[in-house]
Length: 268
Ligand SMILES: C[S@@+](CC[C@H](N)C(=O)[O-])C[C@H]1O[C@@H](n2cnc3c(N)ncnc32)[C@H](O)[C@@H]1O
Image (cartoon, rainbow, N blue to C red; front, top):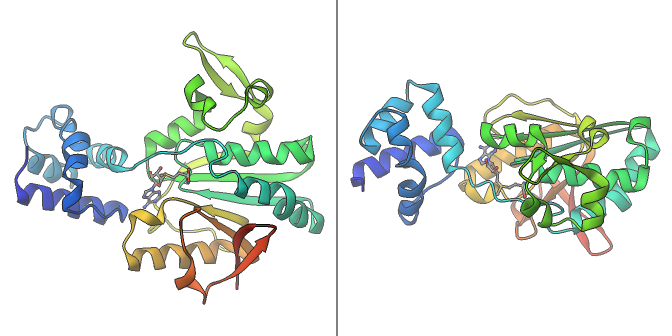
């Protein structure tokens, strides 16, 4: 177990480094995810782990990796990928031959690769277009897995049909895993970045997916996040958020767009 002071120090550290708000209901998360790091860091209390993390970058990153919730799956919520495939990508590509998409908080890569699969279905040969899908996440472990592009059969079964698995993946290694197809891999790149602090590329993206990450932030960091996303979009660029996330408070930045029954947000 840990003391109240240690718990508070851990919550403060996580908030400062990631923006993720952990409150008193998240004791189980600290216990389950941070306590196991003590041994590897050569300390015996949570307080000492946090103290050491202030000066030891490797321990700091291990804590960030441990507290970030990387839950994701292929074609999560389905509709955003249909929207990209049937409306946003064709209308953007009509204007030129290029399309630039950011999967902000890409976790282990399923969202970015789902976009690549959706585009492949309409464009057939991705190499004929200037397509760039960028994924970023604060967790280096998640980014490493995304870059590797290797998934277990279980991970693939979450969102992909057997046909999609055989079309876009090949068996990899001896443990029944599968690796993403080279053509899809070639249009996707991943990097580590903190959505609240890492310097941004301005006016770069036609489409940004920022889904299921703002829920971990407080009100002012949510605002900061959407202001930053706004700056990365091209004029009239599109923002897609999670199915349960509301953008009502950011009407000064985005206007509501709708295609059939799918809502998205357009940069003002
Ligand atoms: C629940 S996952 C969402 C993944 C994907 N967007 C989806 O909807 O399936 C949330 C991700 O946000 C990342 N995250 C949390 N705080 C972050 C921050 N400050 N900067 C960048 N990524 C962050 C976590 O590491 C985690 O991978």
